[in-house]
Amino acid sequence: EFDAKSAECDSTVDDAERAACYNELDKYVTTLEIDPNGLVSMPITQKPSFYGYTSALSQAGVAPDANNAGPLTNVADFMFAG
Image (cartoon, rainbow, N blue to C red; front, side, top):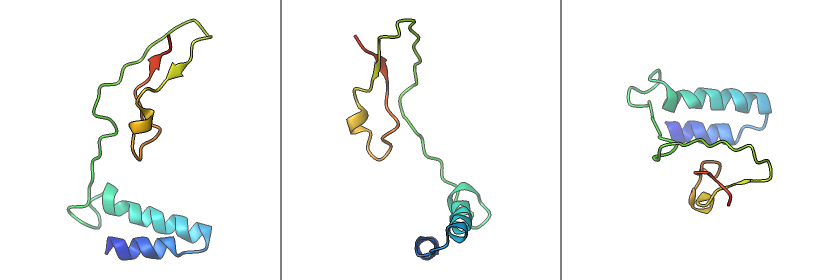
């Protein structure tokens, strides 16, 4: 049922209709309205997040493992350069 609805959303040409279709499709995985087994919880990262501060504006953050982040390319552990 989800795959059929997903294909229907993908083939919709009108942007407003496609957005409404995807919002409806979103309910399959973010709520229990449509399917009692539909709620999905996905961890974004399995490592603890650490935050750093520096007043040296010339230093830039680097992401040593960003190339191995998989489909979540914006999720990486950052450390200060140098």
